[in-house]
Length: 590
Ligand code: OXD
Ligand code: MN
Image 1 (cartoon, rainbow, N blue to C red):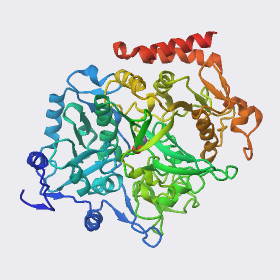
Image 2: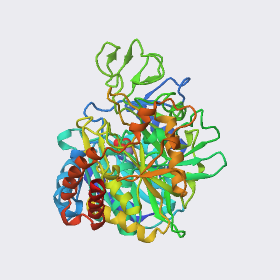
Image 3: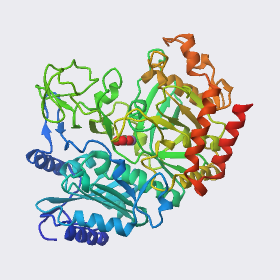
C-alpha cells in the first residue's frame, strides 16, 4: 500500500480488508501498529503535537497525559448504538435496530473520505491470554491516535494478536472514525453475522475503543450464544481468607456502581489476614470447564475507570495505579500540572482548568471534572493485580453477584435458590442510572444482568442461553443479589460499603461452600445479622435490621413491573423465567 508505515502483516484477509477500507475512508497514510515500546513513544509524540494529549507534570505523574474530549462526546450514546441483524426480533426490544444493508449504506456515506488528511492506524489486538481457547482477535482501524494509545493499555495489542491469529480469517473487523464528531452523524453499529463493528462520529471510550463494549460484550455475547459460553459485564475478584484459601467471584453491576472499587477493595481493619486479588473490573468471559465448574477470564488488559469519587479513602489501589503511565480524560488540570476531580483527596483547588479547558474556581457553579471523567491504566499497575489474569484456562468461579443501586426494597445481600432462580435474579436487576451514559441520572431502569446496553442479541434468547448453561455446568457457581446503596429515611446510605463489603463477600463464600447461616425468605436466602456483624462495624441494630429485611408489600408491588418488563419479550421469554416469576408471586402470597 502506498504511503504506509510499519510492517504489513502476512495475513491476506487483513491486507484485503484494510485495502478496501482505505479506499473508502481515503486516509493520507496507513500506520500498521506493532505494539512495541518504541511505537508507544512515537505515537505519544504524535498525540502531543496534534493536541490529543497534554503532558502532565512528569516529576509527579511520570508518563501521564491529559485528554480533553469534544464537549458533545463525553459518554456512551446508547440511543445511537445499533445491532444490525436481518430480522429485528433477533436484536430484540433491548437494542436499537437497523437492517444491515441500510446501515452499511448510511455509514459508508459518512465514512467516505472521512480520513482525508489523516492517518489510519491498524491496531491488531488480542482479547484474552495468549494461547487460550477463550481468546479472540480483533483488528481496529481508526483515525484517532488517542484511541490507539488507549487500546494499547486496554488490550494485548500488536504482534501478539497477529501471532495468535496466524493466517486465519477469524477476527472481528472493527472500523472507527471520529469523522466530524457530529452527533447527527454518529452511529455505533454492530453486525454479529459479519463479526463486524462500524463506529463513526465519536472519540469517547465506550463508543470508540471497540475492543471494550462493542467487541468484548455485544459481539462476544452473540458468539457466546453460538459457541456455548457467556460474555458478561462482570468484575472478577479473588478473595483469600486467612487460611490461604482463594475463592473467585464474578460481579455484574451497571456502569459506575463500584465494580472497580469492589475488584480492588481493601479489607477493613477488623478483617486481618484477608487478601484481595484483582483479575478484572469490567468484563468476564465464562466457560464450562471439564470439571463442570464455570471458569472466567478477563479479556481486557487495563482499567477505564471513572475518576470522580475515586480517592485514597474510597479506592487506594486505584489511586496507586494512576500515579504513572496513565491517560486521564476530562479531569481538571491544576496549576502544578497534576490532575483533580470531585472527590479527590487534595483540597478543592483555588483555581484550575476544568475539563472543558476553561478557567475554573470553586464558585464556578459546575464540576471541574466531567462526572464521567476517566483514567486509562494497565491492570498490572494495580497493587492487587493477580497474575492469574495470564492463565489460559482462567479462574474457577465460586459465586456470581448481581448488584445495582436501589434506595429501598432490595436487601444488602441474598442468595438464590438455584441456577434458574439466580438467572431470574439477574433478569430482574434494576438500578438508578448514572453519568456513564447520556440521559437522565437517578431514574430506576431495568438492567438485566447489567447487560441492557451491552447484550448483542434478543435479551429473551440471552436468558434462555443463561438457563441452558445449567445443563453443562454440573457445579455452577452460587448466585447472589447485592445492594450496597440502601438509604434510610434521612436519605443517608446505611451500609458503609467499600472495604466493609468484604463482610458480604465472606458470607457469600461461606454459602458457596454450603455453610453460613441464612434465613429462607420469599425472595431467597438472607443472612442472619451476626453473619455480617462482628468487630468494627459501626452500624445500629435497627439499621442492620433494615438492611436484611424483606418488605413483602413492596415486593408484591414490584412483581407487576417485573411482569410488564418481561411481556416485552413475547415468545422469546423463556419458560424458566416465567416459572420463577410465578413462584415468587406465590411465595409472597403465602
Ligand atoms: C464502562 C461502562 O465504561 O460501563 O465500563 O460505561
Ligand atoms: Mn462497564
